[in-house]
Image 1: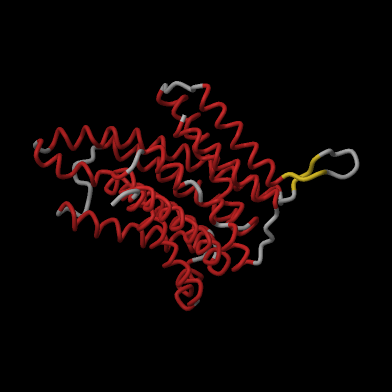
Image 2: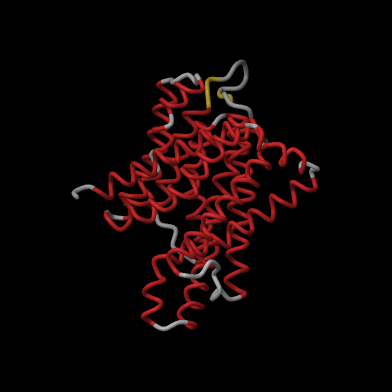
Length: 316
């Protein structure tokens, strides 16, 4: 089918939009930590089932110590720190702006890859960073009063949460790349070439399983330290919150991740990545309809410019 990859990529962006809005509802009803304990637990369970279904093994048995360390660290940075910031941004400034700040993730990915992996920071990447940050600035800054020429139209705490979410996503992704490189070497050393070719397509899922373990353990410890165990146990009675949570898990870590991997098989990776990054634009109308958030020309222009900035990372 022509343009199948492009259609799947847009479907992924829509899936992320549903996930973001569902996470906002779940976080406000259940709390950030409780929501993420359930979310990580369900994502881990789905990953185990998927691993067993496709590979016959429910656990990444071939991963060595170094692979585990890097992938667990990736889970701590991405799923724990990054998602904690992201979900708090949903509560503070809403999922619409939370998704806008997630366009910073490619910038932090490029910086992290340059610092940790020695990748070249090209002029194109620098231009993409400037364009992305300009789009965000247009959306969140307004004309100031008195001596201040500009002012934030959002709570500073929410903006910092948004930046932290982008940082966690970007740095966590680079850490996962390092971990997956070690994991790939471990698997290739442990199995025959024929077996490896059968497992190669599912490496990302098994690596993500390890990351989910780190996220679940961190959130679980925090839940206990905060004394929220009773709140977690009683959360099952909050039907709207649990429904939003299930939708978030299915549309985000499960369907979103699965179809994002599939999209790259049917179209150029740069095109797929760009189309999947359109959720800050796609979320504008649903956020207006469901959350009654006002759509302004400045907000639309800022979102479009941010997405253009993201596209420059992949298309130039």
